[in-house]
Image 1: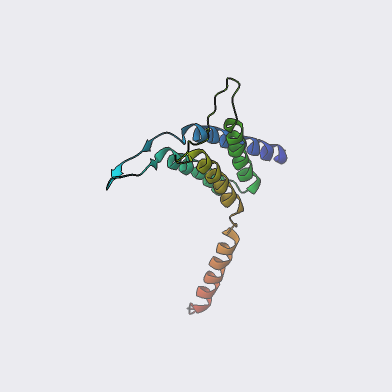
Image 2: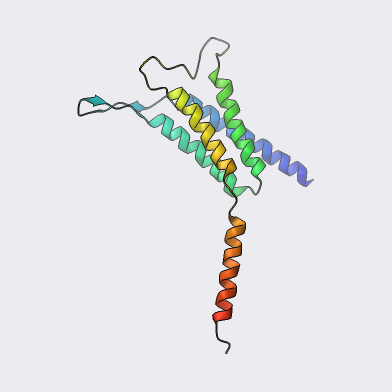
Length: 150
């Protein structure tokens, strides 16, 4: 019965990752503000930043709440699968992640690599709970030895 719950957790994580991946892939190119500072136009891709922070937040939430690295991997694979599916040409010929025009900021490429790096870093980050617990035990033992007995 426990394996059923774990499989459902993985499935839910993959679906949540796919939803965030779809939302990020659709919204990454929005909200590009180009202020002119000192005569130079600087594009600020707020949609890309918001999408990246949202996907990172979901990955971190799953990583912190689930004691299972496979759930985190399922979330990331859901995001990457959504990105892959939406990056191609749709049945009507539309493209969600278009190739950048010459001289333009390649937001689609940046979004693709940023999402892949987010997934890789969060999945590969080492689990430090055991080290923290061992350190806390050592501190507790050291303070117990330092306490004079009454």
